[in-house]
Length: 175
Image (cartoon, rainbow, N blue to C red; front, side, top):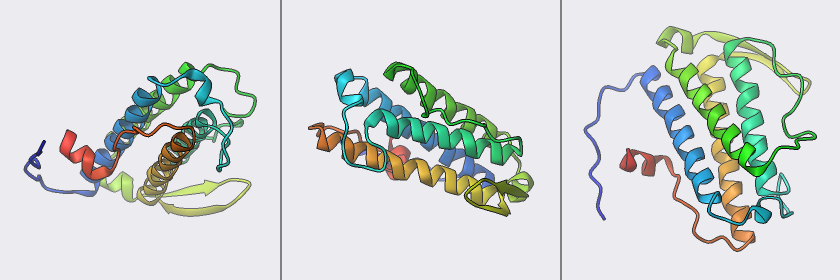
């Protein structure tokens, strides 16, 4: 089935960031919708990867987006990780990552061009620095893309061969 690309509108930094955050939400929702059709037991099955299961990898995406949102907002970072001692269900994880992606997209949608260019301070036990809100936004969303790829690879190692296409260009075609 051929899809026509929608007419391109004027691209600004703010419109790009807004669209990229909407893409992030869409891609996370695509993975969640796909994983909801799979046996729950597969979500916690251990596989060699950066994070040892589908559930843990999704928790990491959720947690990291939550952390970077605090940096972008310049509010104190969460003091604990979601994934450490997480006792929620797989459904809680699915809901949490999507809700957090909505929160991140809504926040980024509220920013002006000038606010995206503002420098923000990043301080953590691992690193510190000052960069524009735009650069940290790019990092956050790119990080989620990286780990979505791991979700697909973990899924393949568990025998799931029907992962959805979540490439950025596919998002354009679908919207």
